[in-house]
Amino acid sequence: MGAGAIGTFIGARLSRSGCQVTALARGATAASLRAHGFRLVQDGALVTAPVRVAEDTVGLGGHDLVVLAVKGPSLAQVAEKVRPLLGPNSIVLTAMNGVPWWFFEHAVGACGGMRLTSIDPEGRIAAAIPGRHVIGCVVHATCSVTEPGLVRHGFGNGLIIAEPRNGVSLETVSLEKGGEPDGAVSARVESLAGRLRAAGFDTTVSAHIQADIWYKLWGNMTMNPISALTGATCDRILDDPLLNRYTLAIMAEAAAIGAKIGCPIGQRGEDRNAVTRKFGAFKTSMLQDAEAARPLEIDALLTAVTEIGEKVGMPTPNTDALLGLVRVFAEAHHG
Image (cartoon, rainbow, N blue to C red; front, side):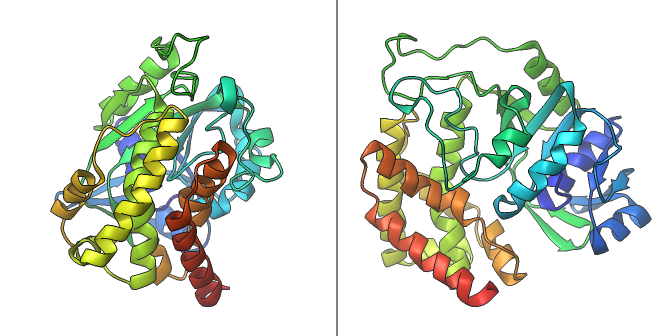
């Protein structure tokens, strides 16, 4: 679901490793996939892989695995199309940026029952994709669409996966769990991890997937929107002392929220930015979307953070300012 950069990255490799893969696509992307199959440029070479193309999911039947690799703005609409693909044992792997709709679904204590209206305001996503099907995924890789159906892999090869129930307590201390996450790994996660490793991914099974999601968010919730606003690559953003300082202020707010909800950040913002700086002049996914006049993933990266901050009593003035800027930018440029 979502035959763009990350969807093609995962789909092509699964196909080449022996999986029968169907891609939901329309327009120029569907035409390209039908003519050429998956096309992925990696290590300077073009890799192709067979794929079945469908423009709707009705009649496709239950699938073992549904890779949900769409952008946040289209998730509510796409979620309805996931429903026909779900059999009793189907897995939905959420390979998406930002905070997912299921983030607090298994939480206990103060965060128990918390629903993110910024992500799923009417509960339609949760209703279409029941939590029992979900396995969380964090993608540590960069890819870009160079033309419809053709994707270039940049750097990174990591996938982190886990049942959302692992590390179910999103409090700093949980008396019910003794402050420790449930470390049991389900058979279906072990099986999926083996399949992903066979497809060439550096796959890690997490003890607390929500914390891994929050850590990635902590690193890209600044670079993505600031790059969209400025049109600059990440190196130029971090080379500017004022912007660098602003990113650190936002990261400090997110780290404080993370500590409150049991997703602590064990790294300084300066050290995380230094890692990003080493990657050089690369375009974030949000900058690519802005240049292509596509909707921006604002809610999953920023609005959800401000909503969680408000719910747990943590102020987010710097995050609020960036949210306002990028929201107005998107409205002014893309309607």
